[in-house]
Length: 199
Image (tube, rainbow, N blue to C red; front, top):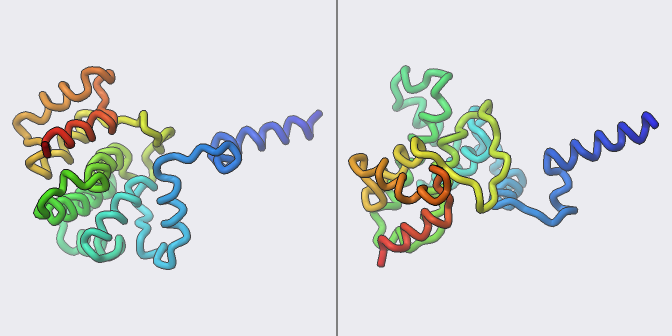
């Protein structure tokens, strides 16, 4: 009896932490990217221990845009940021914002950036990461299509690309976009909005 209980507990633990996703055939949006990051020869240079897994993926994408690596971005932040921005309680979010804003300022200069689906997804994923930036943050439990972002994350990231939003209308825009989803913005609605801007 005790062995059966231990086996069941172990199996439930594997299912809960996602170790059997391959068996169940369900992969989240980020799974392939997590695997690529783990197997990369430069994995150490593209992982910042203070950041959550999702924030690490976003910073890694920002580093690719900026043609550098995550550790170099972190080093630049540590050199350029004031001591108050490096306070441990806010370090992860401030580092994430630094990387996001640098990448967005470069990408937004390119014509037709809103037509690029990877750019649109990146801006949304930046909002997701903003909500759980730190390695000590509660992890996202479900990173499939029904994941959503809140007002504060939207209002912090979206205005970095002026065509998406500005600080004056940001809250009203968010309320309009998230009214049908209980005050949380889902990617399909955000993506449709961005697609409509470019038309």
